[in-house]
Image (cartoon, rainbow, N blue to C red; front, side, top):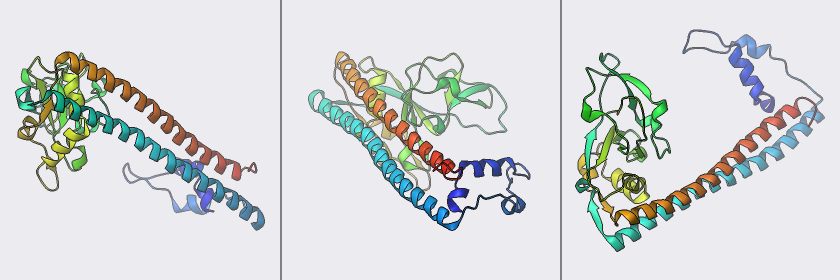
Length: 290
């Protein structure tokens, strides 16, 4: 009975029969009571359960191994990147980020705001992106008109400033070329390079490294909501080789990132295939094909 009710078909049919007000929809008691269940003899039920138990145990093991491999692909990339930046710092020294860039907190607005409509980059847009998804940003209404200094430019870096989850503090993205007027929310800080001695993408890659993230998270203040401030950002020591060397290091990081992404894609496809196998086995079990 449990395996039969675990099928996607049961959830889909239940969703189609839901009623009630938006936000309070429910499946009726009648739908559950009247749901038709195939009922073979008990020995056949035991046979089906034994096969599914064994198959799903193997699938669960395979999923756990694949998820571990997925984590390792990310961890290897992060470890290599952090090691690279430590070596660069040892060889070339560092400069305070405050000497290389200027900072600006994002905008605050409410649903009652009345003014210019713009695209707004928020915490939910970060995920694991290297470049901000400018084409899919939500629109927001400001109080008044957006000031020129609040507009996002190509090669700006936006950093998560404040969040209830401390692990999200310090996430960083580069701003790609875009056509529409865009800014960023008050839960973020914009970093704009002011020195020709640093390549914005190189800086962003450093800010995304484990070493920099640890410093930003540790520098966050607050209890229920942790918050990163411009002083902590400005005090970060950035490994600073010559610009030509920065570009060479970027090439190496991009290559490793591409390989890590390829492996992650392989593991994600495997996880999808395992879930599809589970669904297929359930379908076969209750259609006499197992």
